[in-house]
Length: 289
Image (tube, rainbow, N blue to C red; front, side, top):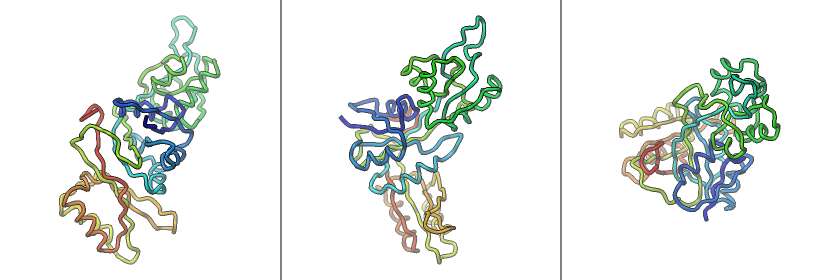
């Protein structure tokens, strides 16, 4: 049975997403306290694959996870998929007759990102609530369960509410209906997946220091070949102030004629190119999912 590592505890969006994506086949889903532990377990072979949230519609890139992906060599991206991040207010219902289920809530325990994504609901319905920030939404649900206090609530998934035997005080409280998260799976071998119509390649490009206009040359290598870049982001190399590499998502497989030629052109001007993966891409409810 293949083991899949995810950011725990149980009940996180990462687990919910992983169970959705790996719905077919025999898998064991293993929670880890830190995302760095997910990478370490996959690198050591304790887990076969690691699930990594890499980008969110509302909050953009998860920069720490991108850095971990770059730092951990030998764990290519094997697939990506998109999953809706549906957050709910979770806790014990108010016992007051006719009151809102969350009328007693005075403290909300959750991950900072989840709280930010539910700003409008919290401001209008619970303007005086205090916030306590924890490592994950599921951790907030666990703390809420242990408190046995109707004044304490969490923001999290329906799965986490079911796991900890709590109630949904308010459903789908995120500010935007299009709150989706892009996940990648990392591992040393390709998982068994259905075919996808969409293929992507992710690369890391470090520019030569003594070549003015190098970034323009890099972009031109893709542009004249009509290769679409879905994302380009600079991140510090952490070696020298002002020294950056470029993280680039390309909407094309490496198994083509055009893309390898573009990469060769980039390397010819002195750029360092590292391939982080060439992999199938799945949309929510799309091909194979």
